[in-house]
Image (tube, rainbow, N blue to C red; front, side, top):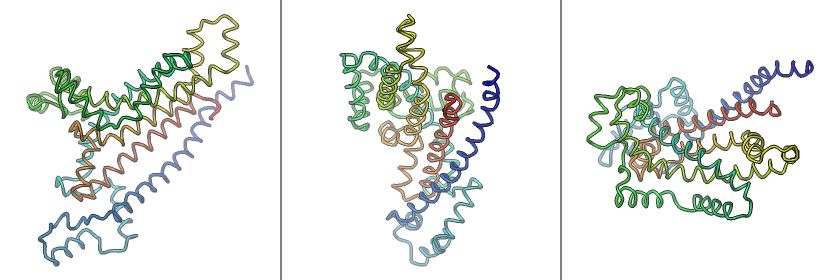
Length: 352
């Protein structure tokens, strides 16, 4: 027991040292993300100058705008200037909204975060139990049924599923609200009765006690969240099944059964407890994927999130907005990976 104590005492410093190394890798990755997004914006066949001055501008006006944007300078100098501005939080001004890009992103990102969070919770709460049931009934009808449902989650295009969901549950049955985050009748109530603490309508309306706004926002959120959550739970269920099958074949599970431990405890405590370690990474990746991959869902449901913002900016040739939104989503993806790596090392001593 005494020999094990120092290991426990030094576990946290080891985790911090490993995390510092990961943090260095994270900074390098952020620099690479910044460079790649900048270069992509320069090779896309859309002229940002033309998007600003319009088709009827004279050559002199075109050249003046080009110089004002710094596009006449060498590429490395343009990148250095852009990177320096980003480090100070300046992503430029959006030509589409005429507001600072950071202000636009700060207004749009909470909507995406709200949608992705609820979808991930749905994926975890349904996907993990479904994966456990598959593993404990391997080859039998519950396993086959859940795997077919999960396969549909990978196969059905999200835009088709979203349109069908709107047609059935909103258009025909009237069970949910339609596109957008709020009905028009509640937008004024939200503006005057709700204090925007976080940008999330659900949280802000609950904190402000505006429960009518909360109910309306929830009715708008449930349908797109279920569409996204379906894809999340399909992925999480499949990975949970794989991890659980591996754990149920281990010797400690056989030993627990021989000792008379109940099957429910063996499955849901011992096996799932060990499978939870790699599941941390799976859930984090699923969450990050929903944050960056909800463009089609946001477009179909007119959800004013970061995906819809970047899409509209791209069609308008607003590269400041495209770069800013892409970089913020990339940062969120990298930070979630960093946090999952940190949690992995805290939960699993072997990773320290």
